[in-house]
Length: 415
Image 1 (cartoon, rainbow, N blue to C red):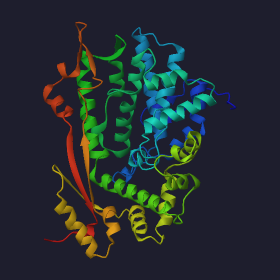
Image 2 (cartoon, rainbow, N blue to C red):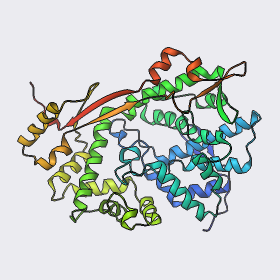
Image 3 (spheres, helix red, strand yellow):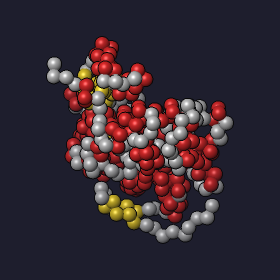
Image 4 (tube, one colour):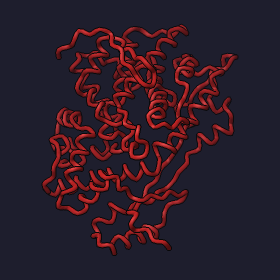
């Protein structure tokens, strides 16, 4: 491919101020059409249905994470940790591309576009194809992303329970939603990091900053990522796409872009049906939020009553009522609302699309995997659970499960 001769670029970011693009190779990755697509992928799905400012993109987030990675590399080098120029460029590319495999509306449609292909798998496949295009310049990046590179701490900076990804998205999502509880001291936390025995450690004096980071993460899940209205909206979005896929595979005529039609008409295992990996990735790289909403606007006029109503509710924000509970909803409760829906003239086929249950889980810190390690003043390295405030940590490590029930609000009665 033809590469542009670039100067160092400055990007004015609302969260950090000026972000520097560190070298020409990183600039060329950013300019690639497959990365530019992230401008058209919302970071928080349909969260703007609750927080109107939450329209920032995966592109914003990737650049923010790149900025924090530059701060981390500079700091770790100042602490005497050796990071070569090749490793520096590799870890920058890894954090820049870590989310390139996200589909439309990010996590909202994680498994709806390509079932059983999570965004991490797609990110890796895209990196491997870009590596061919860039003639092997992503070798170190891919090894770091896969955690096969000898210096394991570089992977931890990209993906761990205290990585540049999380440090950016908490601050960025907090900024754009206006939920101030999510703000964390990213730069202070980075200055508390070091490397001992090839693993990232936090200096003991940074414990309170880490506790604040974990508390912020838990609060953001309840207030933003798992907000009940967001759950209602995103489940409606998934239902709309599932109905469209069902109709497409019944050879019904549907308005859709070329990329969206490709995925609606294919079965779950695309490669088993003859689709080459490059063909799948090429169509995926052409798919974004615009395809979904443009199609949904047209589907409002479709002959299929289920797709028509799902699309209308989605576009006009006529969301399903949602109730949360600490216990699973009984089948009798679900059947009650489905019976009311049936009495309102809905077909049996429509019932699962408009009355359904689900489960959500919030766990800010998993103490049994990839622990956050603390470097004590005497040189010992211990897990965060050994030195943090036990009251705080016990709350943060316990996974909280909640259950939800969705149904049309018209089905509510006064009794």
